[in-house]
Image (cartoon, rainbow, N blue to C red):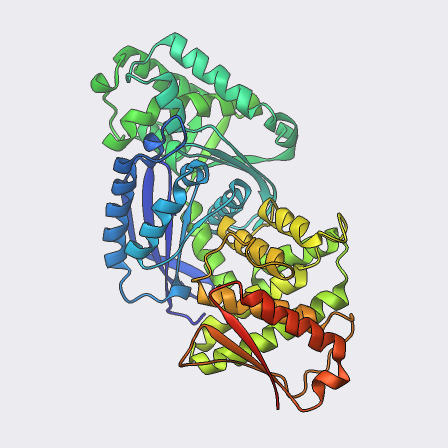
Length: 501
C-alpha cells in the first residue's frame, strides 16, 4: 500500500461498535478519525443464543452511520471484524447479510484466538519497542482475551467466555451491588479462567497490559480520583469495589471519569478484572492505548502483500502438519489459478480483486488433500472438517468456511455444498479447482497447451472448456473424467460444455 492511503477498521464488539480511520505513513498508521457507539448487542442474546430483533436493529442503525462515513473507500482499505456475540449468535447470518448490505463491506466473524492475536498486534504497535515479556489482557463484553508476547510476536493466545456484559447480566441483573454478588461473580470468573494458570504463570511475563473496554474505564476512574494515569493496582480495585458497594445500585453510582455507557457493565467488569489479578498474581496493570481495531489496521496492511500475509503462513503450516503431497498441491493450485485467470480476463475484474481471489483459490488448491492422512476415500470431507475447525491465525471464520467448501466440493457430487450457487465467483473458483484436480489426476504435470476456459457473455451460467484437436485421443482418461464433470454440473443451475477444436 502507498503512503497516504486511508485505512479503516471496524470492531463490532459485544458492548460497543468502533470505527478507526488512519493514514498510512511509512509503515505507521496515524489516526484521522475515531467513532464509537454503545450498541449493547451482547445484551440482545436470548437463552437460545439468538440475537433479538431490537439488538440487530441497533447494530444495523450504527453500521448505516458508519457506512456513510466510509463512502468512497475501496474494499482493500476497509476491514470489519465481529467478536464473541456474533461468534455465539445462532442467527448471525441473518444479521450479517443485512449488515453487509448496509455497510457496503463484508464483516468477518473472527475466532477467539485470532481476536487475541489482533489485540496483541494493536497493543504492541502503539507501545515503545522493547524486549520486555508482555502479558496483555482484554476484558470485553462477552469474552476475555489473554496473550503472552514479546515485541510484535504473540506466542500464547487464548479467549475465554467471560466478560463485562455477560457477567453484569448474570450476577448483577437488577443493577444492584452486594458483597455476595461480587463474591459469586469472582468465583465464577475464576472457574472459567482457571485453565490460564499454567500458560500465563507469573514467571512467563514481565509487564501486564490491559486493552480497551473494562481496563480503560477502570484506569479513567482511578486517574480522575487522583491515582497514577494509565495504571491499575490492587488498592485501586479495592477502592472502586467499595464505592460500588456503597452506592448499592447503578442509579446511585457516581464516578468522575466514567462514561454513562459503562455504568451498566461496571459490576461484571470489575469482578472479572479482580479475578484476573488474583489468578495471575498481578500487582499492577498498565492501560494500553492499542486495541483490537489497531491490530486490524496493521493486519490490513500485511494482508495487502503476499509475503507478509499471515494466512499464507497458516496454510503452509497446515499443509506441513497434515503431510500434504507438496508437488501435487502446487500442481493443482497452479492450474486452478491459471484457469481462473482465463475467466477473469474476460470479466474485466480489477487486477487487485483478481489477485485477491486467486490467492484464496491457490490456498484451496494447496490444501485440497489435507484430509488424506485421515481417509483416502473421503479425504475431501475430512479436509473440509479440518478447515472448518482449524486454529489458523489470520483467517476469519467465513474465510475458513469458504475454503472448506472448496475443498469439500473439489471432487464428487456438487449438491452436498452448503454455499449458494448464486455466488458466481465461488462457482468459478470451484469449477477451476475441480478441473485442475481432473487434469492433474495422474499426479504429474498435465499437458494444457490449447486448453481454454471461457464463460458465455450471453449465457453467464454456461462455461466452455475448449481443447486442441487430438487432445482427447492423447489423454483418454482425462477426457473421460471431463465428460463426467459435464454431467455433474447438469445437476446445478450452471453448465459446462466441452469442445475439441
